[in-house]
Amino acid sequence: MAQNLQKKTDPAAREQRLDVYQPLSGMVVPRFAGISTFMRLPYLAPTQAPGEIDIALVGIPFDGATTNRPGTRLGPRQVREASSLMRLVNYGTLVAPYDLCACADVGDVPVNPIDVQDTLRRIEAEIAYLHQGGVMPLSIGGDHIISYPILRALGGEKPLGLIHVDAHSDTGDTYFGGQKLTHGTPFRRAIEDGVLDPKRMVQIGIRGTMYSADEREWALSQGIRIIDMEEVVEKGIPYAISEARRVVGNGPTYFTFDIDSIDPAFAPGTGTPEIGGFTSREALQLVRGFRHLNLIGADMVEVSPPLDQSGGTALVGASIAFELLCLLAEARAERTSGESRLNVV
Ligand SMILES: [Mn+2]
Image (cartoon, rainbow, N blue to C red; front, side):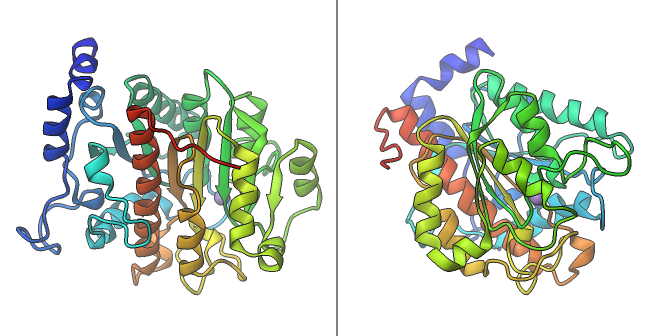
């Protein structure tokens, strides 16, 4: 790995790597053809990633912590397929992520579909390996439990800030008589483990019914800033963006996007849909508001293909994943070049 890391600092080698890690051109091989990878990027074994690429797109096909309707284990495959519709340049921000960072699809984490704890260990090990090798992860779930081992892998040195876009707080304690590892509990576990700083955590779009008002009370008592959907509607998306930027500040920050934050009219293929959500257009506006933050990774979770066989939800998911990739690539490039335009609040 040491030799690889040395290669990384050589500017000529870096230019070469940007040439290699481009999506398969839709002008050469039509976009309906070829083998499905995220964004039509080259596939690279995760063991080869350190020193070679800057951002790894990681599939995490696990739904074993789902408390209601499953199916997200099939998410990465369908999102790969839908992501063949993504092109190279972000129309809204003009960010061209593949000109900034070497990116590759590193395949799926080899999960254990019948063992939650074993799966979480495997996810944490792979993400930690990438992180220690200087590679930023953009993970595609999978149910929301996957954020927990990722936060453990990334937050070991210093508790992280978090931008959390979701219909649900996911800060519950236990389900079904003491089960602590579910897709409704990842952020409570991460806070308990000290890898997530609740005072630098913001949740956006929370709504729907709750099992009990205590869920919200616990989150608020930890210092989490909840910009629930009622507040977004009242004050607007630009307000939500500036308030969230204030909360996370300039410290290392992770971004997690649950597809159920979007209204089921646009994204019905998810296990726990809630009406009154963001339109897909509003979601683009929201995510694009988080440029120039100190982002160290991101995920897009909870696309469940069996619940939307039209594939439309996976297209929304792939599009959000591209937006997240643009944020990560720009943040990474700014850190590397030392020309940081970090978060002015
Ligand atoms: Mn969630």
